[in-house]
Length: 182
Image (cartoon, rainbow, N blue to C red; front, side, top):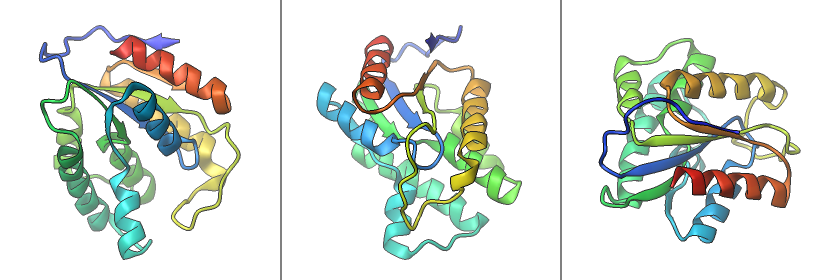
């Protein structure tokens, strides 16, 4: 079920489909598969790229710095003139991360996330098997983190689709949502 919120998109015709959810829920796999299927531009999860390069240690200040880098990275990967594109997470992910890990978040991050009015969401359920990765955390909290991501998306009032299932079933559901959001 796609949840369509009653709000004005601003009329600029730009749309960013954000794949979000807890760790090891297939976000990157879906982003790449959907980008290939629909021939869309995309931006991968910047936090992963950053932490792979500089190491897995972080604090609240660094998460906020990575969030700033995330915005710049998205702008580099997806020009503002692109009408439809995919984002492997957005600033909502950083809001959840900061609240869960540090119980606080800088006001600029909240304001910047609220300004991303052209975003709609595919919220991935944690029904896939956990895949170990040295950057992944909270294996046993994926259900709770899914609920936090879903609540954060609902709070925006933007359109979203919950994505579940395995393999082709999951991709089919996500592809149908992309077509509805296009």
